[in-house]
Length: 389
Image 1 (tube, rainbow, N blue to C red):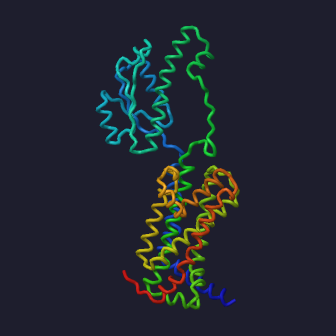
Image 2 (image 1 turned 90 degrees about the horizontal axis):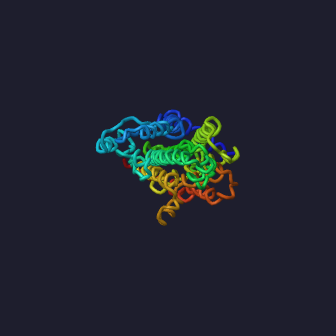
Image 3 (image 1 turned 135 degrees about the horizontal axis):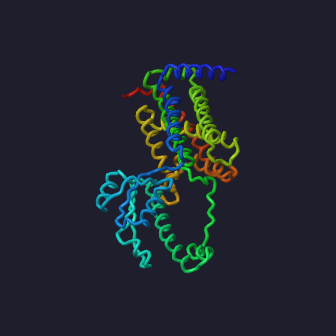
């Protein structure tokens, strides 16, 4: 009963701090909610659409104009300019006015009709990877469609049937199945990494900040006295209100993306509950551990910021971890966001049982238990350390 009473006193004290300090209000509620709305609305269409491209049509025939019209009809492409020369189109692509342009040289239609294999070119910028890859696909498709249309007309004039023409133009018919995300939605696979990553960043920082401010404002001894100098009770009482707030935020995010925006998920609701719990506890464990290693407000928050930012590169959503160097592959295991993302991919996105992701689950559990390694050092810092700005 005494332990529960002490826990209640410390928790009540922490609640008063959370209410009085506006940093907690903004970093635990306002900024995470803004982040959630920003990323999910930024990619609301799933894929970027109507990206600007240019055309250099020196042939200027009905066939070349038909190609340009078909290109403009694509969802992701919008023809915004016609240029008299390649140099002018190149200048605009370098100034980021357009992302790509199609070059149709003079005599293209004449050579095409004569079967002399004309050459058209398309240029695209890979400064932005997403736009470059998507526009390259559209430009390549329109080039193929142009040659196929002429070939179809020529073969029909020679008396071939439609079935024969189809077999000649497309000898192998592809049956493509895109698993779990058939819409190829950027929102579905990027927001489910970026938003949890940003939430974990705030958890890292607030965990270290709440301990560092006890030293900064000279209240560390008072905090421990509330817990009868029992550091475990002091930590549990301090982080219990934060845990509840973070869990409410994470579960609200999961409900919003999976049940309001209908992001694809094959896992059970209980898997989402478990994943959210491990996300919060693992991030808090790392934040407390970072402060325990370096009991300094400035240094611990710097380490947490650095680790959180590196997590976005090491998570494996943009560049696969298996394609990284061996040292970086090993380093990726030290980031909580990596394990969160792998559990999400395996058990939520693809619907496999948790047993398939047990190692990543164990890794998040290990991050949760990290504070045990530095708990004595935290107590010693609170009793003896002097805050140095």
